[in-house]
Every structure is written in C-alpha cells, then in structure tokens.
Image (cartoon, rainbow, N blue to C red):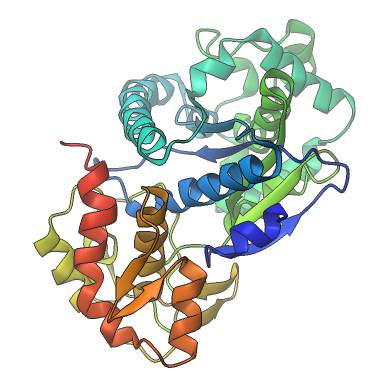
Length: 376
C-alpha cells in the first residue's frame, strides 16, 4: 500500500506532490499556529488523523512508524508586529498558548500511539542552525525582496502600510539570532516579508535535524509549499469548514485557530466551530444549526473541494475512533471502517446526512472531545 492510497481512505485527502525516490518509511511534519482565543477547535485533529494513517502505512511497509513532528510556531507572529512593545506583548501572550497547545497535542500523540515530537518556536529559533539555513536560502536567491513583498501584500492594505512596520534589524536578539552579515544585507527589509522564508526554513531545519522528507497541511499552505517541491513530498488535505458552510457559500476556516467572537452570516463565530472542551449539549446545539444537507462536496474558490460540515465532522469522529483502536464505527446500523467509507455510503444512499446529524454529537463526544478535552 502506498502512502497516497492509505491517506485517501480518510476521506480528507486533497492533493499532493510526491518524490519518486522517497524512502518507504517517511519522517514528516505539520506546522501549526496558536489560537487567538482560549478555545481549541477540533478541526486541527485532521493533521493527526493523517499522521496516524501515514505511520500505520510506514509500519505496514517497513515495520517502522517513522517520526511525526508537530511544530507550533506561535512566535512567528512577531514578524508581523508594528513595534517592539507589540513584540513583547505577543511573546507574553503566545508563549503560554504554545505550551497549552503542546499539552493537547501530546495527549493526542499518546492516545493515537504516534511516534515523534511536539516542538514550539524556541526549539527552532534557539538553534543557530535554523538562522544559518534561512540565510542560505537567501544566498541561493530562493527569495527576493520584490517577490516576498508581493506575496506579503496580500495581507496588507497597501505597500506603505507594509513598509511602515518593524524592520528586520529591529527584531530583538532575545528571540532571533540572525547572522550579522545577513542583518547588514536585509536589515532594512520590513520584517513581515520574512514570514514565508521562516516557514520554509522550518522545513529544511527539520530535514537536517530529524530527516524529515514530507510535509502535511491544508490547502491554505500552498504559498509556502511551492518552495519545498524540489526537496520534499507534500500532502495536503481539504480545508475544513465552519458549521454554517453551505453548497453555494462554503465557509472555510483555519483548523488550528479560533478567532474572536464576531458575527458571520447572522451567527456568532463560536456557533460555527466545535471545540475540544465543548459539552455534548453544546455540540448538539451547534450541529442543529446546520441547514443545508443535500450535498457531500462543495467547491471553495480559493481552496478547491471541501466537505459538507456534517459529513466532515463525522469523518473526523470516525477516523479518530479508529485511531483510538476501534475496528469500526457504526452509524444507522451501517459498519464504517474509514472516513471514505462513510462518504461512499452516503453517495450510495445507504446513510443519509440526516442520519449522521442525529448521531453526530454523540460521535464527536465519544471519539474526540471526551478523550482530548484539555480541561480534564
């Protein structure tokens, strides 16, 4: 069984770039950020579902699971700060969030039997090798100032706004360790344009440190992934959606980030996500708000194929239940052995989305929130 076929069974696979020469046992990684609130969405579980499948495939092929590295880059955001006071505040806020997410991830590793490490920003940034790699990528002209500015402008209202922020030379030496000759060369660059190089450098650092050959992530990571294709295999899974996502108006979300509580399509943001610490009653209430059930797949203009939110959350629960050691999960009297098995049964009219909706809160509680609730 090759890796692509094995992870396709999850029902979450979207697309991939594969190196023909790659070893049968792959060490791989996934990057995360910290959440903006104190809530952790269950959608980020999809990375661990795929990781479990890759390690199972590795073991079937070679008897060795390989290593899965989860990297929580919560301090990368200092690159987007306007001044030093904002940098200091961000560090104060995000370091505890990194540690909190790390504890959640370690609980998932232990429960799924995953082999590997959970790292945070300082695990990389305290190592001079990381900064040497970043400098080398610039020396090889993998990045140019103009290209990076154009990429970064997607997140700013104007070029003037981008250029008015923190400069690379102003980044505090307490958290970054850029080689002096490199600072002399790019010190006056706006620090936000370092975000993409910082993301790419993490891949090459993990390649050197842990022999990582593969990256996994969501469709939204294409802008970073394109710099890796010559040296890594890359597997991307479908961008997750909020509960109010519909066929004609998909509402994609960043799986590992919950944003502040604002209104979207008439509902508050917290009503569109399910969190690891939600009660079964809260989950049931949120699921009941989904009202567009007559489809399985939709197309998002930016990220391509996405799932109906009811189907997607059920896939998470089924795959999590199997990763926890269950041979199958039953819905409406039908035995399901994978997320793709659920999708196939829906398309063959053996299970309706209304059937899934009826059981969904129980499934999520049993196979996701109860095992991984960070407050327990």
